[in-house]
Length: 426
RNA sequence: GGAGAGGUGCCGGAGCCUGGUUGAUCGGGGCGCCCUGCUAAGGCGUUGUGGGCCGCAAGGUUCACCGUGGGUUCAAAUCCCACCCUCUCCGCCA
Image 1: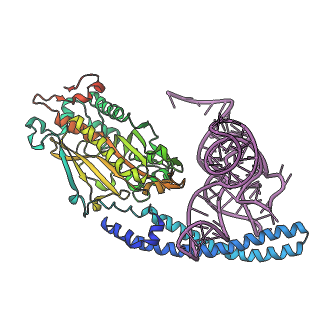
Image 2: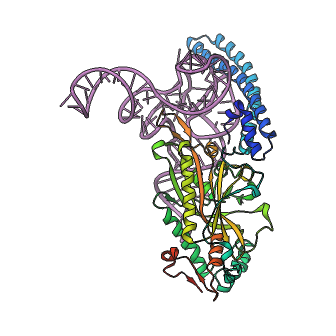
Image 3: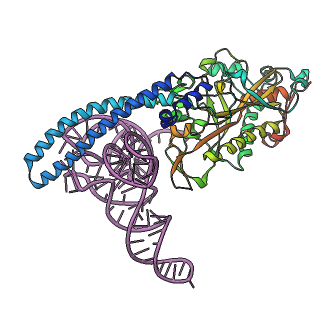
């Protein structure tokens, strides 16, 4: 969430940032107004409380001195003041709740250097790497759902039988490929990242901290009976690992990685890109995440991007890097790069990673702070994360890209050690 | 799931029964100063977070915080209720 003090002291700057994101500023104007009302009432309440506190101490003194008449008089007076105090407090509390709710809904401001734009179409292609998409052969122009069925490695019908459409079932070498990708990516990050295996179900508090709630509750699976949420990304548990804690600056940047299943209802995207593995309700993903100081954030962001990109390079896939424009940034992001791979069979660029910088927006929600070496004060950390990588679309692209004229599939040599030495699917 | 014990400041650990000058005793750690050729030991001091208001600032003042949220009371770390978490035992179980 935003720093309420910025809303108070530089409302025009905040408003300008939200405008760049294409967000209606009425909500933040309303917030400023409610906050002012809350402060006014809270100040009055505190004044009354101070009086009650003082008189209560007097009561104690008088009682010890044996002056019960004096004590009674003070108590009667305090009862009356207390009544007014309670009325004010109730009003002030209601306003405080409203402030909090508004803060949780108002998006993060974009970074100064995020490109301006209204939406997806204005994202900037920073670079295109790997093979030339136009140069793929005819044998590679077969969509992965066909390749998967031919080779018996992807069984969408039976996946649907079990759980409904968009719940894929991988089989045999296809299942093994998912496992290999996960193990390979985790091993690739092991040099600098601590591997975590977090829970896949989290409390409301946890999924609120990273920003998916309250605004996007419809996109997440909720187990009502236990009031737990199925994580849509490992970002959710990893962001809250340090919730409520004060980290030492010497430990920053703190780098974490985790492979988890990810669950998404895809409520708003029914019918879009639903073929095969393009959009699924459950998938595996390896996430990399860092807590950093504000000074480190930019470098760490570049590092995460380089990590995710490095994996795509090792797989030999055609990909491009997008600098996400202000209008396409998510609620929580200040700056974001997306990685898209080119899948020759579908003839589409598929988003397989999103590498984001959140400033202190998530850290404020999760209350993750660090003690600064310089002056020993505590301050909010910055959070950053990226997918490295999300497997279904990588799986699809590998299968399409690796398809040979005889219908078999050759996977990248880089994966050989994780595939038991055999990179051929037939 | 059942029974019991417990959650206090950076850490350990009092206070809770018997509500009141307790933001909280004491010990350890950290920090500063003194002592010292250096180190150890010792001495003295200091050491939470968040918000409001005043102030250019230093600072002053006030409110809140003893797992979380409610309640009782003039007054709650202390009493009552609910929830969360930890530990021990029992049950169940991959």
